[in-house]
Amino acid sequence: MVSIIKQGNYMRIILSFSKRYELKENFKIEVLHENVLNVLINLSISEMW
Image (cartoon, one colour):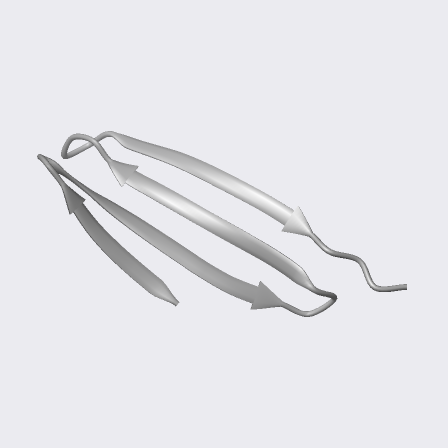
């Protein structure tokens, strides 16, 4: 799932995908300026035993 949100002068791109072993990673990439990237990575792992 790819979600692109424009806010003011910058664009927010959110990539969400699930891997095996119930590994879920949410990547938030904020483009603040042309050459400046602020990357926020939220990692949540749900374990099934």
